[in-house]
Image (cartoon, rainbow, N blue to C red; front, side, top):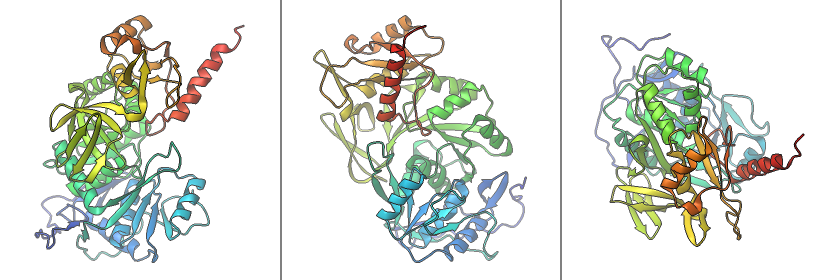
Length: 470
């Protein structure tokens, strides 16, 4: 393995000057050109190598406006993202790489080209390959300043309710989001860390935590995507620096189930679905590190966080302000910018802390009383021994009086004790009838639980119940 150059050797450093314009931000926060910017298959890639690669790729890019970045390797993604940014191009970051959605995307953005490090792409779209083999010239390159207002990326919602919605992100908003992330978890004074992610860089959460955070904090990017437990263990064993794992509850549960050691781990950040209290407690017990949870959205990025084992309240990110009117809430300032209405209903405790009540469309009405499915799910997931679970209302979004059901993954728990614990946390009229124990829920790779898949899952269980018994 290539080690990071010895500190006694004369190093190539960047002269730190005050920004000539307050409306620009540097591409990188690293001040040492010989510092490690990324780890790729156990090999250190230095800042100057990265800048040379960015410059070389930038010289080959076409005179177009949009770059569809499909790179699976996180370092390749970073090179393509940076080269596009410096060239003034906008990175399109689709969450799905299937041919049909990509064709629709290219029709929506007819001047787009593809940046890729694999061959699984539509043949009729212009593409440019990225690899670690090209390093450009050995000539030192300065870190380019980027105008804060420059459009850097377009990120997309998951598209579970139709064509994914596009949200443009300026370079300034992404940088401010990385700074807020550092401050939220006290990471600004911890240089030379490595961010490892199990989520794609094309996802807003992955972009924030595994690309922008390292670039703007002097950390290193880990190039891989170690979803499987064995892959993560192998990657961790090759690294010699403190590591922060950016992951989801689905992946965290898989690592916990293996009972595997995670050497070098300093902290865990989880997002994209509620994190069960029992899972957070087990993770902290096994790996002796804090487990933090992020609340955010594609439109605004990270909004708040909490350490799950310390309570249900969320702490608003630095630089943001929240306003509440009834159960509706708006966030403004910082990396969010203009006023953003949240899709979730909240209750503010004070200016910095609040409780999530769930989205406005998930209200359940039973016996004249109202509750949020998200709030019911939160109560369920905070029961010790519950690994995963969700309430399900067949009539959600329609009229009727369908019964509430709950699907629960809780090995070792019995029905009566579980219902007794639920009764302590929710109004009895919302107790699930029936409560069904299942081996797993039909979550996506990102940990989401689309309504369509949950409907099919429930219908399949009902169908099996009606099958004649032999």
